[in-house]
Image (cartoon, rainbow, N blue to C red; front, side, top):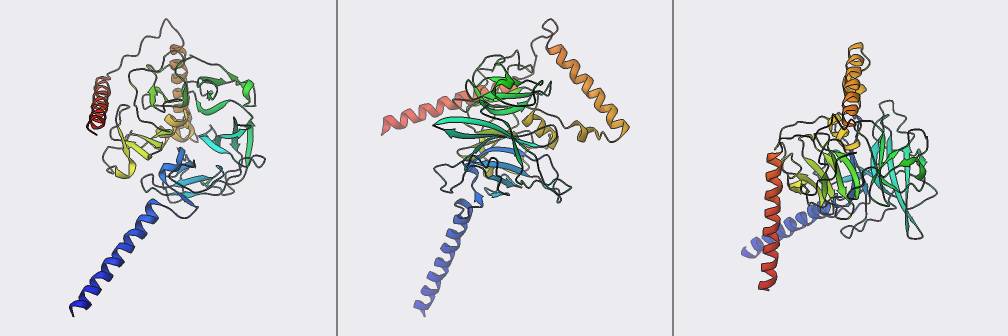
Length: 383
């Protein structure tokens, strides 16, 4: 009798272990080529479209890493409805450029018409080549859902532009150079996006790989050499420099805001999220983040505005109505007036901000970093 009980217990333990191994395998180490882990996502963006079931849709691009052996040619987009489930599903395979089989999507953007723009990277004779592509066929579905189909047009060849973003004040397209990491401006008098169509560099400063904006319309940059998060010292990025003191020393690939005002980042350690809606706040893995911890303070259009530097005012003001069109005109006049003031050196003063809290947070992070360095040194000495 005792032997039968022991055998039964052993069987229960074995079954339990097999279930745990199965779950771990399917959550942490996806075997299907249609799914990748969070730490393989490089660029990410929120879709401006509303899906039929009113769910949020995110798109990401795949970069091979040492933690994942899934083979890809770099042209696959992945999508998810939840950033914290560690599960990105491959959307329709996108043939960005049939003449170039191995393209890495280095940057994703939406233009003023909600058409997706991407910067594609490939190597020729060990030289990086950056092309810019525009999506010309979203879907035959009248709701313009998020599925990505073939239908891309190359609009810029060998541009030396590694990422793009709009100027929040002028709506002109900006590009970050792969050559010097500086910001260039697209010439509005040309229809192409080739190397000669970019004017700059504008305001030479610390080289960056990508740019966007924070909640207060200050430009944010990801350092080209250190992948740290920088911010301009003032709203007018053309005259202000990157702040060399207020630096969030979290290494990231890409950034985007969440609805609660905290930054979300793609990184080699997976998708990360800030604990607090402050630039100085530390990041943790989004899977460990407590849901509904912070209040919702941003809309979908706020998130897109900070990410791409463009405001979809037709959607915000409902320009299908006379009142909506009137409000949009007032907003445009106010925006133009602010831009003129920023470009008048006699009228433009230094931005005065109540940033005491964030200043203290940066100081605390510096102190904590020093303590970590001391701990590492002590560990080495004690070995």
